[in-house]
Image (cartoon, rainbow, N blue to C red; front, side, top):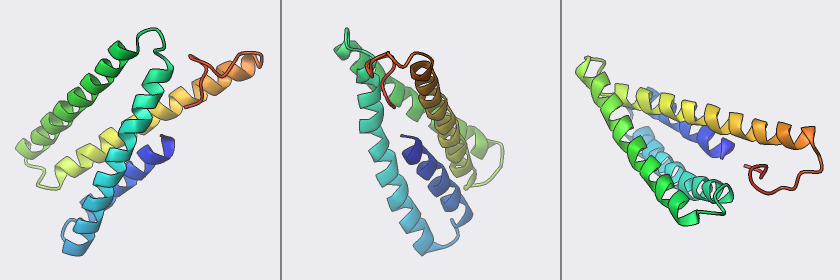
Length: 131
């Protein structure tokens, strides 16, 4: 997940920087879509690891979070456009949101490792599972 989020951040920033070039835009859009879709299964698996007692509820909450993220991203991108920052500004907003996601996933991974290192006898089961 860390790698996927890092790639998504880089590709979105690259798309914003190369938006004037048609070939680079097409390549970046294909990469962005592929990487973005690759994040969903990883996040779903991560959610399910921590929700063994209520997998259906957790799965529904995961999908709801994706929908909230879609709405929030569109709203923030719209605010950037309305503020007059230009048509590339939503890409920078998306890159910032992907970077925020990278920070959250990295912090969660580091926390899980530090908890396991503090007590090496803990199993690799939730909430100490690898990210």
